Length: 199
Image (cartoon, rainbow, N blue to C red; front, side, top):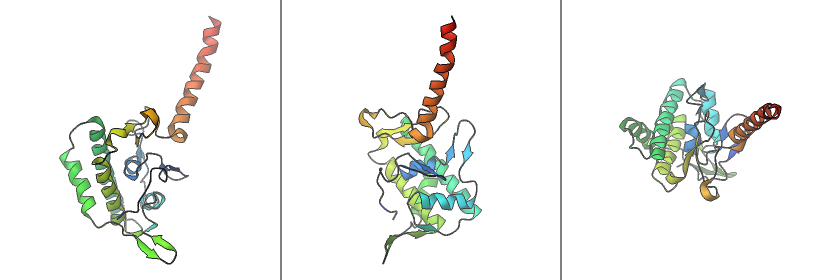
């Protein structure tokens, strides 16, 4: 079983990975960034996958991944993203994506252990991936589905849970997208202001 998580705990930004979507499965789906443009791959090497599993807080340690583990993780990630998109748009699930996700969720998951220092979860890459898949199943069949939104930054394809008052959140995160869009809009206004004054 994956460790319990809370939306507050999962809003984390660090130097390596960004966790702003409000749910581990959404952050996992966002590890292929800017899908409509440059398509930046976060899992460029097995170590990057290992780091994501630990930094996500789902496990405390993971045995080193192999290239085959990375390919499996990418396959599950793409299935999760496809299913999230379908659910968000009110479209039917694709059979292949369902099969990939459910197959990963059926695998043994990371199991927490009690130590003298407290709770600890050590996992293989397959167990950690199963934990992510199970969380995706819970998300896509749970009460947060109506709160799924895509980031308002046209270059960003992250989907997040909007728990803001009045569902007015526009960005996956201010640090990652909101500030960039606001700064670009400010520069555009400043650039057009002299032209308007010269008329």
